[in-house]
Length: 361
Image 1 (cartoon, one colour):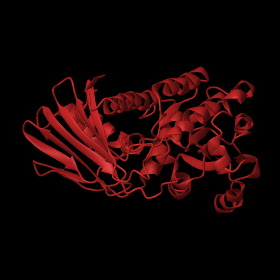
Image 2 (cartoon, helix red, strand yellow):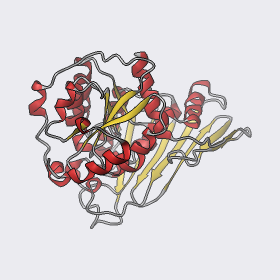
Image 3 (cartoon, rainbow, N blue to C red):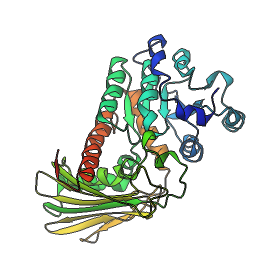
Image 4 (cartoon, rainbow, N blue to C red):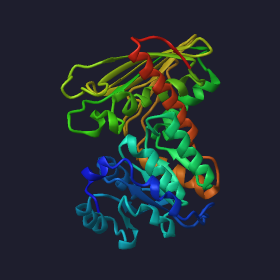
């Protein structure tokens, strides 16, 4: 096995072994059996968030891991009862095609590696769950979509907020328009990033706040408006250039929608919190916080209270995605949804590079 550091430097392995991977298209999972999930990458999000959430799920369960850090394996096996046959590294991951225990593979890697290993998963005939953002480029997103379609496996992107109750109410407001025409959306999300030696600070690994946190306010603007933006203008700010020499630390971006609605958005690696406000002709509503792992709550100007509901968001997300597979239904967040965001993010980066010029979408 390679170490994680060695693995992160290997952006060329994997694709060359795709032709040898066996494909089991149209995996059928009986309704009374839990969907078997393998996590690819055992960093913070897999270790501290997804693996514990998989202990709370009803429709799926943790059965396998893919890692380049061999010292992590015994701990994971002891804690989660993972069989030796269900442990893989990045070089032999394609062998997972021969493992009936695994039905879906959740790719939880640095952004620059999402496409590569999502394609390995698809070519292995396994359903693909890809953590957000889907990929750094639209081209890579399309390659993943094509691989999943070619192998007849389902693809979904890990946008947990679209599974969250109060967020779904905001999405319904965009359709029902209880306060009339939507005029202005304000959305921001961020946290204080403190590690300069992290892949999120490295351009070649898909780092930058617009990719990591920016998709949250971008998603919020899109689902709050209920339509797709027609233009974007963006700018970056950096207060710690030593840490963020290669990528953006804070990004502001404005969107315009066909209806005339506008959105002012911000994503930050220096400021923590999140907030979504939607102003309409006859009132307004908000979520504060709108992006946190728990406690998403809000209110509307007519006195409606959107109270926080206690449940594990990631467990809800993975159960929803597992049930979609078992029922052969479309997932709540298909790959095309992730690709739409990346098209806008790429345009936003072009705008910032051009001094905040408005880019038509």
